[in-house]
Picture 1 (cartoon, one colour):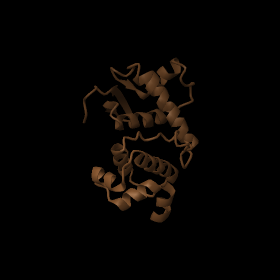
Picture 2: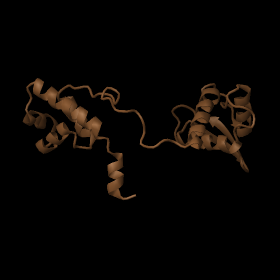
Picture 3: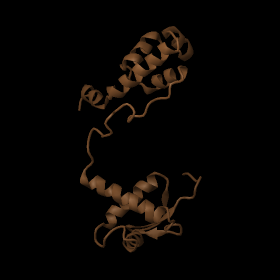
Picture 4: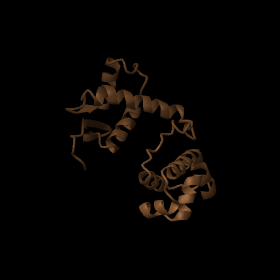
Amino acid sequence: MSNEKRSERIKSPDYRVFIGKNLRSRRIDDGYTLNDIKEMTGIPINTLIGIEKGDVTNIDYYVEYAKSVNYQLATLKQANIKLEPINKLSNESLKRIRLTKEIRKHIILTKFISKGSTTIEIIDELIRKKAIKKDEVTSTEISGVMRNLAADNIIEVVSKTGNKNTYILKEPGVSQ
């Protein structure tokens, strides 16, 4: 994908335009000039004009402008932005997300693996808790979720015997 197409694809101008109009309105209502905002933020006037039009893509400029006029930035929902990603996730990804939620709920939050557990023990516990059905999930899928949780520093592998890992909750405040 070319840079131009990628740049075009990731832009979300509706939010910027909404915020820019509100910043401009707040500035004018409060009696500020563009020079006043420039003095408070250090942002050049041409960039401030671009912010008010929604042309500037760097969110940091909007934040600094908003702070100078005491404007609380709107949520996407307040700006009537459709809360849908550009691309939908695959069924495989949706299955992984569901499995991750079940593992967090029944394995992580209950501290089931606080003394160490293998993939098979995790599957058995999920079945016991009726979070999954027998043969619904493979050990490879569980291992994939556990790798992601390890990458997020939530769990760690404490031992590895062949393809069999033993996972344990990471102690709070401990980082590698």
